[in-house]
Length: 283
View (cartoon, one colour):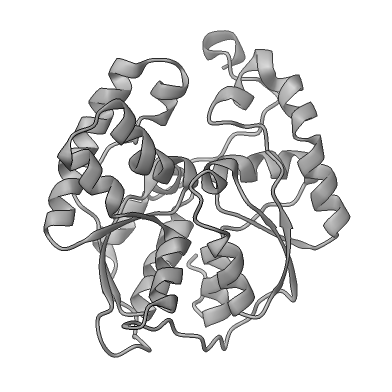
């Protein structure tokens, strides 16, 4: 791959799952038992390529945590990659083509009464910011106004006067967790909602906000590999200084960089919340 497409041979790549998230979603038997009686929300899940193809377990836990809290989940047909890889490579026309497809599908979902939730921060940033900047129009603005990071939406449910998050956590959670806040999530200026959810579940959180230096696809390229690792050193030092066995992070790409540099595989915060609820991991 280094010789043909320029991806560094030394870079750890996320493996492909045997079953896509969308396949699981369509085959699943139905919502889990709710602890909240009434429906509190209706969302369309934009799973992202990383959840769809590489880590569907994140999507499974998202759906189960949401349904436990009375939030109905749907998966609109016709969604495609958000287009970030094209944008990051300077292929703006191809990015716009991808974006127009998603805007059409997601705007219809919003008009059908849904908000949009995204479990990966780069993709939620694209839906909130880049579609408005590069494509624009009423539908792009409608999608942006109704798009939430997955933890952001749950925190909104928790803090609203009209809804309530289930705060009983009978399952297991690590006493201390190192949470890495990705750059694309911090750029959304929504606070550290994943951290807040894990604290609500009973964990003490050490926050690390240094850049992983993956930067979309930049850190994967052979010519950037060594520089990327140097930039990531501050993040690694902060994680090692925290000294916790459990690491959490919202960004699957950044988590891959953390795995490469520390040898520890981070979990998505919603996976940690799911285990705290007592929701078993699927195998």
